[in-house]
Length: 204
Image 1 (cartoon, rainbow, N blue to C red):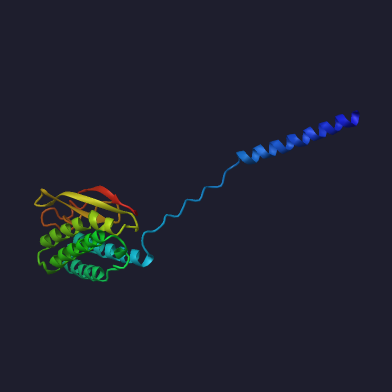
Image 2 (image 1 turned 120 degrees about the vertical axis):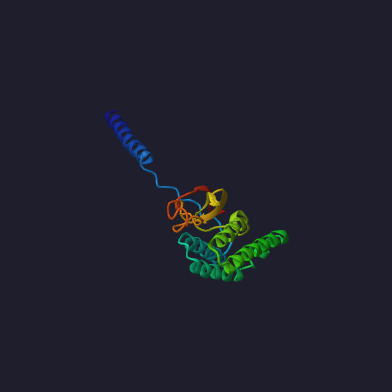
């Protein structure tokens, strides 16, 4: 009888130790869950093309901040060349209407860029840049199902004649105004940070 009692005590003690270890393990720090990798709509080469177009646009914007018309035109030339190297094969997989909308948007972007290229007055260049921005956001980013880095749509309420607003796209949330810029004839660099973030452009 004694042996039976001792055996039961040993079994109970072993089960208690096992239960305690099991609870400790389950209450310990859990490994972080792996986030699912988002499926891409387009190939890497197509997204590289889109990012190149955006990069050239941002260089035009930076040149206008500096009131550097030569640099703005050089970047615009590259922007047009990038649009001309368009990767249409993947867009053609979409419906005919979507493809036509995409091509019409690209055509409008090229027209505004071409107009900027022949301007001699920086204010007129900035107006064409404003129109180009309106062609890109949101139409272009939607048409290409944008998958690049986060961008910001920004707005100046007094871009032209102190009363006409205009938008631009930036890679940074900090407002650096391409319409009033660093060398404005009236404000100089005093209105460089005039404006606000209106929206963000993120991967779809």
